[in-house]
Length: 352
Image (cartoon, rainbow, N blue to C red; front, side, top):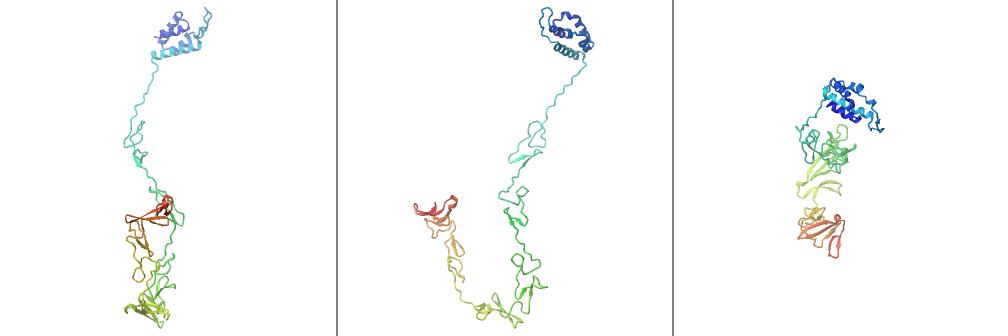
């Protein structure tokens, strides 16, 4: 095999019949593992002419290229025959997918262990977890519904239940006080006569007596139906006027003092009122069935009896009220970008 290979190469150079001795030497060198010496000492490649002397034409064989070809052939044959070189070929082991404990994500071999159903997503450990969507629309503070918050309020402001910031409400300060101002426009309590809320040493914020009659003087005062007076500015006297039929405690402008007197005849007050109390245990009127009474006026309610509202309807601001099948209905014309008014073509009120 080695001789045949060299012969083929030498044929390129012009034939192998004239190189018989060279083949014998080469074969012997290969058998002894001296391929390198053959390449250097035995092969006369440098003396191979590029032109054939017999016809003067270029043989087409390049010396450097020929040297390279022969070197490759010799070295290849040497390795095969001498067994001096061993090629260690390594093959990659097949990829083993790893999905233990996973329900989603990569299996480590360009595959997946599973999918998550929306809105859940796959986390780094291969588990499906739900993604919380924050709810902060229209809010500037308060919880976002996902364990966080939508913001915080500036100093002096509190976050309301609607997620908006409001100026902090005044906090009443009464401590041990039972009366007097609470610091927020109110009071911590009221004192029953004759005691007053003391604003002096030893009685600050407490109900205390001031003098024999407290705050009651000779003018007296009414505590419900009880007339309270201070006699001789020393003795506190109480009189229950209700014990006399038809009497109560009243202020007498002629005397300039309080006392027991007959109850005056009640005068009903219904001016401008359609319903509600007349101030004398009576009423000023009764509203149509289903209508409500607010501040002495009857207020229409959807689904109530029509009352004085007919199919022609009426307008209250931009709201159209009308009667259908004996019941009241309305529609807000502003919703349609219209106004409530009389429509001549329909001889009734409506949105136009």
